[in-house]
Image (cartoon, rainbow, N blue to C red; front, side, top):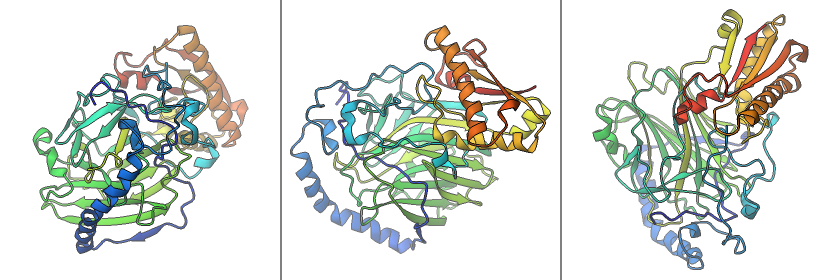
Length: 459
């Protein structure tokens, strides 16, 4: 499939989460049940294969992993691979993508209000960004390693490139070499529509590993050598197919699981959503995991503060059919704990990359809610403080356009703080500097992401 662009047609069924999950059910796994369940997966796989082949027989090529294909759209070109100027990682076109995407486009765009329970705040400094822009479609990404296979693809109706994970393996970004006691990890996740319950979870692993380049394969699902790490699993379907599944394992020094849980919740896998965003937040021992705006886990003792975590990987199993695939994109790792109060009130200046906008637009993305709420809280508690809100962009695109965009984004932030959080608008002025004041060189994805920021300067 080398050098073949994956034009994923409309109607794809991808992961999504909802903001109200009061009906969620939690259960504790019995180790024996885990073994039994894996045995059931394999025993039923042949039945599942036969069903999948019934769907696949009517279609051709890699794009046929997705059902309800729009035959009229099949010949239309996919969205351009060329990154948009000053686009946030993981963004899609404002209109939800190509019109041919049909049911795959979001019917209702989430708002800041819909994310009112989302308290995630990205780390202070971006240290790694992976959007696969440097990799050719059809290749395995140059900065990753695996004991399986995979390739960079495009998905019609979404922005940029994706890594399609191959069968039963571990996928390791070699550029992650150190994880401090405070960091955040974000990435986009998608699946194919004909996804079997008997296929395994996508596991996100955070661990302490002696020599990552040699030991990363220990995180295969069936390997007993794994230790000193946290493993978070996501799956788009439970046994009934109406809910998603999340799981976690915490492994100790001897490799044994010392804490585990599994949780199901409704409407995790619905057709009107394009992409789910996964956000992981470590604060010393505490772990929080979000899927879109829903907080899946909040564990106060998941990480061992004595461990020097230095490893992130993705692990899967059970992909013997093309119909069961995971895709990841737009990985973003940031370190440090934002200290809005101290920096704005004491130092007089606070800068954040945690306010995201639609591509080439001043429309604020709803996942910015946690950052905006944190800033609004500081301003509310310090009622005499006035601030100048200044927008900044990276150097992609036209200088004049970037300057105008930065001013519009600053004004959008002011409007959100006033309209959604009740901060008096007269306490806030706005300005924009475009690309004229970079904090880092615009020569790397990390540098560009760091320059797409909003500053708050005490007046």
